[in-house]
Structures are given as C-alpha cells and as structure tokens.
Length: 449
Ligand SMILES: [Zn+2]
Image (cartoon, rainbow, N blue to C red; front, top):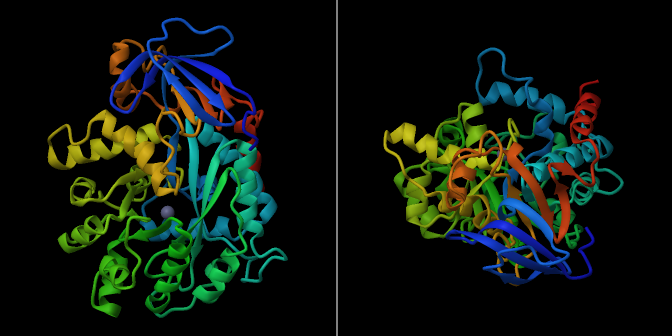
C-alpha cells in the first residue's frame, strides 16, 4: 500500500486511549504514521476528516486461513467432528490455484477491513500445485495472498507453514501433498525467497506436531529465530492429537515443542485447548502467546481452552477468526469472556479494556508488529471507528464505549477503517474493493464449479 504522503488530520468524536474513552481527539498522520495525538479538541480543526463514533486502534486478526471462507454455510448440516469437517475443507483446498486464491483472499481481506481489521496473520500451507509439484514461482500462492492483502488495503503477516506429514510417522495423504515441501530444510529454502514489504511481514508456522516430525521442529524454530520472526503453531486443538503424541513421544505436544526449542516470546500457540497444568506452566513461563479462536472452536466443537489460566501464567492473548465461520473480532473478544462465564457460572474474567488489548495490541505483537495497536505518536496510523448510533450501540453513555463495542457491537457497526493513514473503509463502504459481497460470491462460486 502507498502511505499518505502528506500530513492529514483526523478528528475523533471519541477515542479509545488504552485505558479510557476520551472525547474530542485530533490525530495527525504523516506518511502513514501518527505524528501527533491531541486531546481536549472540542471541535474539529478546519480540514480535518471527522470520524463520529468510537475510534479504536485497528484490530488484529491473528489467525486466518483465507480459503476456509469458502466453506461458510456449507458444513452446518448433520453431525460430525473436526475430522469430518476437515474432509470437506480439503475438497476446497484441492481446487485452489494462485489466481482463484488471489481472488478469494482479496475478497476475504476486504471483508476483514469492513469489520475493522487492519492486520491479518495468514497461516498459509497450500504451497504447491495439486500432487505437490512446485509452481514456476515456488511462492506463487504466498505471493497471491500478499498481493490480495495489498489490494484489500490491510497489512498481512504471512505465516508460511511447514506441513510435512499426515500424522506421527505417516507421509502426507493425497490432499496434503500440495502442502508439503518434503523436509523442513526445503521449507526453509523456499521461505527464504519471500521478501517483506511495507504492508507485509514474513513469519513462520509449524502446522502442528502431527504435521512436522519432531526431528525437524528445530529447523523451523531456528529459521524464525534467525530473522526475529513470529512463529505460530496449532497446539492441542484436538484430544486425538494429544493421544497420538503421547503414544509416539511419551509426552504432550507442548512438552515436545518445549524440548525442541519452539516455545518463547515470539511464538504463539493457536487454540491451546486441551492442556495439562504442566503445559500451561511451560507456555506461560516461556512467554509463549495464546491465540484463541472462539467462534471457530465452538463451530468445530473443539472445546474451551484455559485462556484465564494461560494469561495468569504469563501467556499474552490474541484472537483470530481462523475458519471464518464469521469474521468479527468483536465477537471473538466477547466470546472468550462469555465462554468462561458459561464454564464457571461467574462473570467478569476480563474487562472490555483487556479484551480490546487482545483484539488489538497483543494481536499485532503476535504478528510481529509490537509498535501497532495503540493511538500514540509513533504508532502506525491504523484505526477503526465503531458507530455508537446504531440499533445495537445506541443508548449507553459514550464513556462506556469500550463495553458497548465489545459486548454489544458487531462488525456491521464498523463505520471507518484507516490503514497507514489511508481510508480503506469510509461510512461502511470499502474504498478499494467496490462490491465486497459480489467479490466473495464470485470467488466462492469459482471454487465450487
Ligand atoms: Zn487454524
């Protein structure tokens, strides 16, 4: 994306300043960065862009598989488990090409911008042509995603994912051949060709302990460490994975990752659902983050992870829409709290401020952007405005805007999204992708046919 090359002023009717709602705030933006934040600005300065409602730092979607969006609404009939859902998911993965994936991801990332998301962590594992033959550009699929994010006006951290085996000691199955580079060394060689750019960071991922053999985990961890890059891993989403890991290695997946140097403050475990007390201590004690994906976890009947205990042990929390059954970070934030209420039959596990931090600053940090997620001088000019005058949000006092945003608003209440100083969503309309619903419908139809 091309940042705005001149100074522009935004006047915020209300702004979330990490701890409280502040009325009348002026932001100055130069070259995509916040260069001044002034409070007590009762009336909009001349020439300022006026943002009515509550402006939050841009939201971070820390876990995405863009192509799963094609499954929305198609896997809700009949019984089943994560594993039966996965078979249908693979049937869509089989059909992706760099062109169709670009079209779908552009539409999905535009949907994210409409929901106030300014950065996405794309956990990307569909690397090669069906059967496993590399494309002429071995990163054609990853490049398609990076380009799609640019066209949709959002930042991306491409978490290029090592996926080498079907299960412990099992080669990739027919669907998974296109995910595999053959070895962690070959994965690293391909990833090293990817270049960062203004809107795109490159990170690493281990699909799971079942998809990367134990003796190759350290190669992926080392690649990320050498670059100071984020490293994500699906962790203990399913009890079957825990059982198979114990059978093969005599330990939990978390212990296996710890023993191979995967845990640490740049690492994020995604889901972290079925953990032992020792696992929680290992994750928290090493500063490894936790990305909760509550709408996906409930959609796939995964279970409820111990997010309260993880955070108390030292694991920062982030949020992701993962399978995109819905794309709404406000819903993810409130679902984390509401799940905990149902489980414990008590309320108030997180404040709205803490939930917004997970949806923003800590999510951006998990994606290798610790400078983002706050409205402070020097931060990137990434922010989103929630309308406080819709049927869902009208009524509460503006000073309760954070509670209103987290516990009542939806992505449909997002009025503006600004990324690197550029107005990507204005008055609820995407400025770069003219008709997002139509773009989604076309891209999904192309994959169905
Ligand atoms: Zn996932």
